[in-house]
Amino acid sequence: MEDRMKDRLGPIPFAEMSAAQQVAAQVVIDGPRGGLYGPFVPLIRSPELMGAAQQMGEYLRYRSAIGTRLTELAILVTARHWSQQVEWAIHAPIARDYGIAKEVIAAIAARERPAASALLADEALVYEFCVQLHQRQRVDDATYAAALAAFGEQGVVDLMGINGYYTFLAMVMNAAQTAAPPSSAPPL
Image (cartoon, rainbow, N blue to C red; front, top):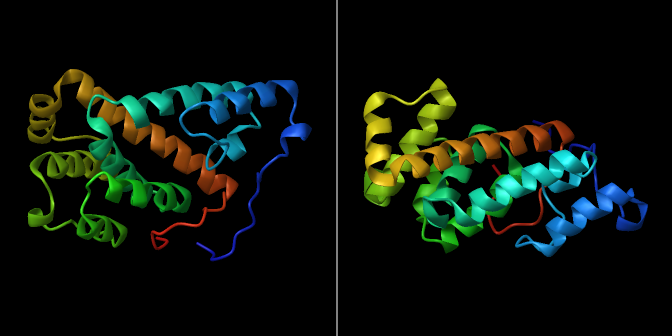
């Protein structure tokens, strides 16, 4: 990818948004995100799609059945798979704050398998599940069974949902060439 790509669908000043865009934007601004940034900048062009996406994302990011630490790990694996700079810039520091080891984050950034000693058992399982889903487009029986035993059906479905949702956002931002915000995480 080019180092300096032009943001194709950059921010729209609130006053210049349509009424439907303003309503959709205000929902995001008033929610736990506190602002319209990242994928919501290009998605505001389709307020109904953005509304549905932000509702799903709010659940998956803040209330998933696998918890925030594992959700953030799944987001990082997805961001790395899609080389998604915005997701990485936002979520690598959050993952670290929630206890994902810096060595794990660095290995994912380098497209390397994290050392087993750096991963907790549930992290190793989430990492393997996500990598298989992205690279093979499926999850083998042993990994699926282990995830089911560890997280239950809702947890497995939420884990699949996190991978799918952040893939959707990565595709939107990669196509829109959304600019990454400043971050303490080095870019991918």
